[in-house]
Image (cartoon, rainbow, N blue to C red; front, side):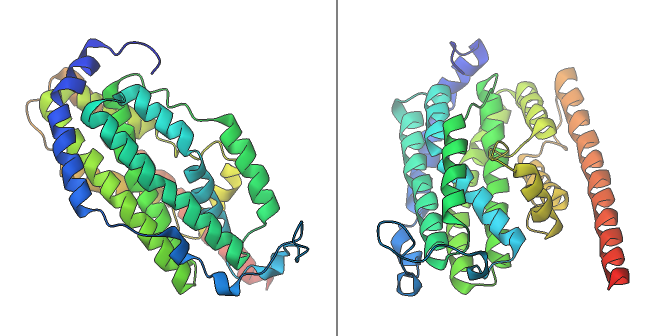
Length: 313
């Protein structure tokens, strides 16, 4: 947001700040310090072509399946846009007090993710480093703008996004078939989980303060949700391969992101909502039904494709 906050957002910035301070202190007591360089297999790395006169990357050097390569590249390029995310946080939440302290701490922790993941990919020659850098320049050069119309929309988005990102990192690690890769992605996912807990529990407070507006904003975000890396070059093709591999798809988004959040926040069972809140809740319910139908169609398509492959063989 580049303009003055609306009256409700301005009020919530003040009324939620004690909760921000409490949740920040809880976060600091729960978070663990970890060192990105310790997750890089330096002993197996060797020089690339260029000033050091090493060996150029070749596709057969990667031991990762193609969907896992896609997932790790998407995850890394998403993390690379941290400057844009920090700017949005500072603009929406402010740079002073507990809100500013949280934004700075979040940024410091998120900065480790790109450092560790890029070093791992380079050392293991898991992806083409030249193409990766070209894509980073294009993606970060595009920047990031949230377009959130209110504070509640911004909080709702990061609540959903942090849990979605946790699942994306964790599942990519499981699919790596590399113990170190899985350990690294599990470590990153643990950070994302703590970030999600902060935002989720803050949003629970927001629902208490402004129930109808909060449920409306959450419905808007859920029904229009896209991952922050959607502007990455080739995102659509990569997302299809990632979904087909079961790393992140509509089933995961519904069952492991939306439904747990809705249960914890009590959105679908809450009493006392006004007409606008009830309408928003209906929208969420219809959206969940659409997601289930879309996921089923995608599964049937994959089954047909696999059957065709077997018949060809």
